[in-house]
Length: 357
Figure 1 (cartoon, one colour):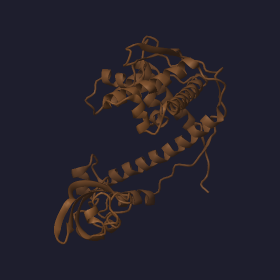
Figure 2: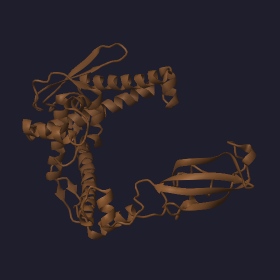
Figure 3: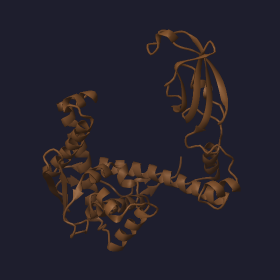
Figure 4: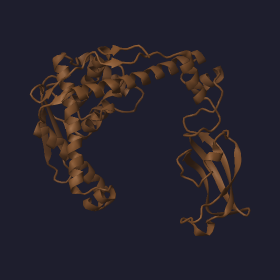
C-alpha cells in the first residue's frame, strides 16, 4: 500500500466515518455490504446494502493507461525544499507568530496590542502596510512599522487617518525551522541520524507529493470516462439523510433553528436539498466506480493485509483496534477503505508515464 491519503482525497472518508457498518461476518469486499447509521433526532436506524456488482448502474470508460508525468526528484528539488524550510526570514504567504503593540503619539492605544498572534502575510488582515513591512524580517527581530489608519475606520473612528507606530516582534514562522541544517540540529530535533538521512526523507516526501498529483489526475480522468446509467435510490437516500442529520446536529449543538442555521450559510431549504443531492451523487458515483474496478480486476483484501493495515494505523498512537474500526464505521468500512486504496494503487501501476516536455 502506497499511502493512506487516497480515500480521503476523493471524499469517501466522510461517508465512511459518518456511517457504521453492520454484518461483520462477510468481509470480502466483492460481497454485498450492509451499511447502517443512526439518526440522532429519531434514534432510528437507516440502512442499505452495498452492492458487489454495479454494472447496470455505471459503465466504466478507460481506467488503464491514463497518462501521467514521470516522478523524478533532482538534487536541486531537495535543496530548494530544504532552503525554504531552513530559513529565518518572512516571505509573502507565510503564517507568522508575532507580538505587537500599537502606539499613538508614543502611547499604546486600546485594541492595538497582542501577543502570540497568528498572521498570514498577504491576507490583508491588518491595515495597509502592516503585512508588507514584515516581509524580510528575521525570526526574533523587532521592527517599528510606521503606518496610518484608513479614513474612515469603522472599527475605531478615533483612529481614522491617524499616524501610528506598531512595534512588532516576529516569534516564528509556521512550518519553518528557522535554523541551520547541520548534523547537530538533525540529531537533536528530528528522528533522523544524519543530514543525509534527512535529505533522503525530503526526497521521499517530494516523490509522495508528485505521486499524489498523478493520482488526482488519474482519478479525475477515470471519473470523467465513466458513464452513470442510473443511481441506486437506496444509497442516494442514505447519504442525503446522512448529510441532513449531520448538519441538523451542528445546528442543535449551537442551539439555533435549522432555518436560521441555513441562512447563516446563505442557503435555504431548496438549495440545501440540492447540496445534499450533489453530495450523495458524488459519493455514490465514486463508490460505484471503485467497486466495479475492484470487481473486474479481482482486487480483494486478504486477512494478512487487513491485519497489517490495522497494525500500521495503530503504530505510534494510543488508539485501540476498537477505536480505529469505530472511526471507519466497523470492520467492513475499514476493509473497504483498504480495498479502495488497492484500486488506487492499481490505477497508478497501470498508468502510462509520458516524457516531460
